[in-house]
Image (cartoon, rainbow, N blue to C red):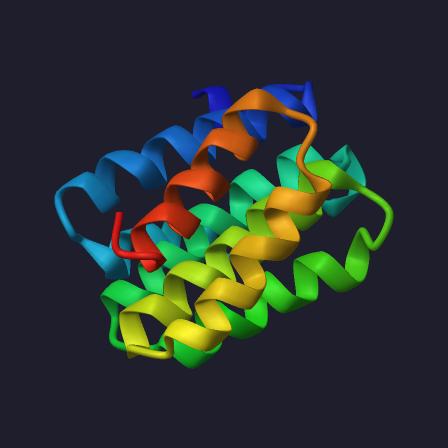
Length: 136
């Protein structure tokens, strides 16, 4: 019902919530189906990052971490001046590198995020990742 709402932000929020419910059940095919054709870029970097986060999780869940990495990298390319997009992208890439066991790459992305972050939530997340990579 809300996915057909006149307000595009309401539509996107409804799609994201539906996809997150499916992701919570690890129903990755449903996540992909719900988000098929959804484009958040016209709504701005924050919405775009939220969409990429859910899509990337589904791609990882489907065993496609390279597709998830490309989704994060594309987000950063679309919004090269936006902390709202760059920080989630860099932290997403760091998480993927860590999952692959590439600690050096994970550290590079996490360090970038620490240097850029002004938002306390992102800064805490980036610092926690750096501490984890440092064995702390």
